[in-house]
Length: 438
Image (cartoon, rainbow, N blue to C red; front, side):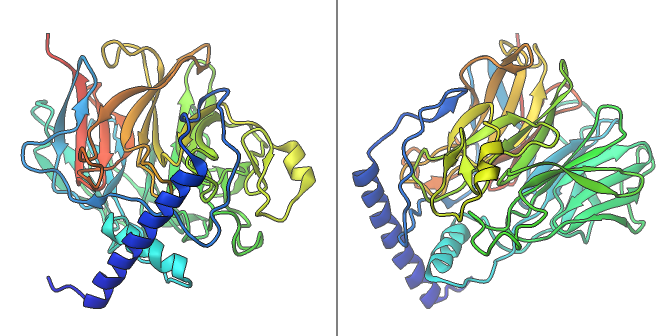
């Protein structure tokens, strides 16, 4: 493959600018304890202005024989390899595992900051040609490794969320919800889809899906177009929200709003409450504000873009005092810029030594002076709420010097055999986590 000398020179320039910005941030902001838990210590916001903090490891993939590091008492193996940017996982009733493979196309750069950001994202394998497909994986012999992989659905539009209700399979494309006829045990869907609900594409492009426990509704996460409504609130209309959708008619309403980028969705089964993980805004500091895990209240407003956490106003945004006064405080801080994307409920005993709680796939930071995320964590729950500090499940996605990434975790799901499955979109792997053999 030939290298464009202009692109290469610009990439080196971006790296130098980013390194300088990182140094400035460290000098001006110092170091902070991670903003974690229900009562986090959040440093005052320090707007970065025109000099972005760009620090993101170069994507390399996994060297032969190298695996993520599993927590004590756990082990990890590759359930499937050779995928193309696997992002999200859905397990069918017959035990087949579906994986959505999609990638953000290279957006148009409009400023020097955009060029710098795009150069950084390209180096980290975070933008490019999208596979736009869902792949079916099958482990017929039960050895924990999928020996069968084939296209299940193709020619989609940045597919992400998936849901199955009776004989209809739903896909969350970036531009809308589509319904396909499904036959139990089918290896492939070739029938055309039926568009149900339209979403604005672009920006935060993922469209997660989750069915209600009774199957009567679907819930979808739709992220904002920009960081802090940079193109005005009209461009953000209908975004930064979780939708409730009638799967029969496609009629929808905004269930909760003010959520900059709500990605993973999960039910807390003891209370029946919906939870989500949200990526907060950039440009205010390493720990400001933290990404978060929160319960989702019908009609609730969570602050974006006017404020964050406990109604802390973002002075970079034209204000709406009425909206700020109504903003709900999230339940549990996950640290700044962890890019917490994946979310699933882990019942007690699924992994040895782990009680009830939520598993979170943290894709990892790009806009802070010290890296955060790049791991899979667990938050314990008691009485329907987070009940303790996060615990690591998988780490080791970064090289020791943190300059390259072997992988980046995204979607998480409970596998058909009770294991934990993790989509790794840089490693192009689905990891399988279980207990150590007795």
